[in-house]
Image (cartoon, rainbow, N blue to C red; front, side):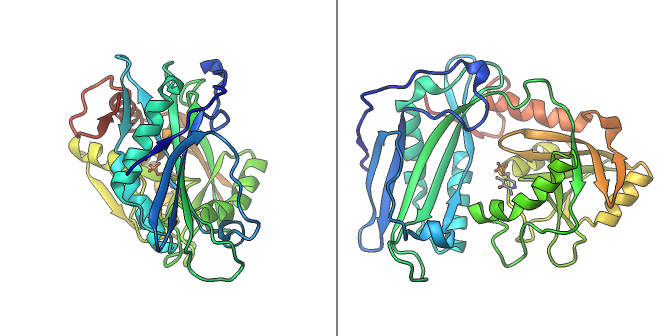
Length: 354
Ligand SMILES: *Cc1c(COP(=O)(O)O)cnc(C)c1O
């Protein structure tokens, strides 16, 4: 893949790393590439960060043909820049693309686009404790017609956003509400893909939870409203009577890379991990009889997020005394240790790019 590079004439001023927040600041450049069935992927380019100009009838604006990925570049103590399992993101993007009839993107193009863009904007990778460069690759249908058909023209782009520490005030367990009205996804639908539409469908429940003072919802399956699926936009894990239980990937659940990494670490540490259906009744019983020892969400943004309280049908349960549990803490330390290069990476998960 040949990448044309047009450098910015007006580099932006960098913000103080303490005030970065999440997804608000963007680097100087972006990667863009277009697709048609005749040409395949063409015109790979890195250009100054700028607005898109798209046709008002563009497919993405009407029929929601959009998928994305999310990963981070980390600055290690020695100054090097590392990615965490980026091929997993490349594979998942293609799995999402297949479901939405968007074109496949060769994995090497994905990796090269990321590497080249990050190298050009490497001064934007922050180095303070807990900070990282959030990477947002996305792919959307871009036909200039209102006709409903599979996508012919598509665009793949990558933008970069230096982001602050997720846990500025330390890792505080969150309050979660079990959602029994809205569902996020159904089997046969798009739950296992990272598509924008899943997020749009999640907003109402998330908003209602916030109004009640909860930070997110715990999703139940769309058919029986019985089996636990995910927490907000994270996968979820429980420690019940010494064993780790996490919902099996049945098609409506997003196959998280953090989830996969947690499972590998847990098995490596000798824990029994069960990927299976977990009903809300079973969880309720475990909360009542005290066998629910820990609960946490896991995803790229937070890494792990301990759950300190669960509300189900107006009944409130405290989890792990409202504190972070031992296993949750171990996973957090292990994953962030590997990502920031503070401890050895026995799994070969990190890719040093600079
Ligand atoms: C992205 C995402 C996750 C977490 O995936 P990671 O690869 O671990 O970041 C979990 N659930 C949903 C719905 C997601 O969109």
